[in-house]
Image (cartoon, rainbow, N blue to C red):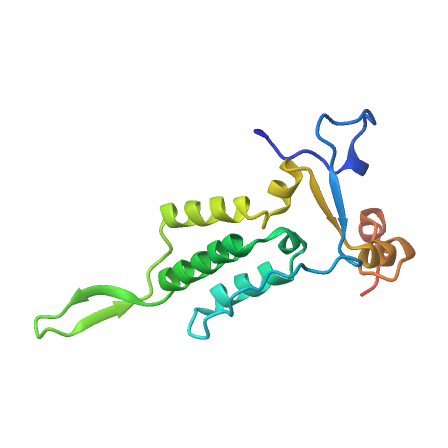
Length: 161
């Protein structure tokens, strides 16, 4: 679905049914399937480890097949290599000079594209008409038990931390 991500169903003003119905997944009741995911590499950069753990804990992982986990693994492996120190030159004596270099724009674009294909972003999940709901978080926000504060209260100085 090209264009900006659509709004969530409850945010839509018009209530006519969309052409493609939205699949809602209650994460509080759904368990991941029987697909085994490979273990993360302990030698990866901390950011790559964080991304792998986030993919495993995210709601869209219930749809991941072994090929998807292989793509996540490849993504994290490549990201780790890009974030580690890289060879930037060789001295006259033949010593290898290594340094951290900024992530290349083309690499970042490729990573973001793969993240979208793996439904790792809210916008891409909305484009695919998938909404992940955490009922416990929603209930806490509605009952006032969460950290959500109406902006009008914050602006009026009625909110104390």
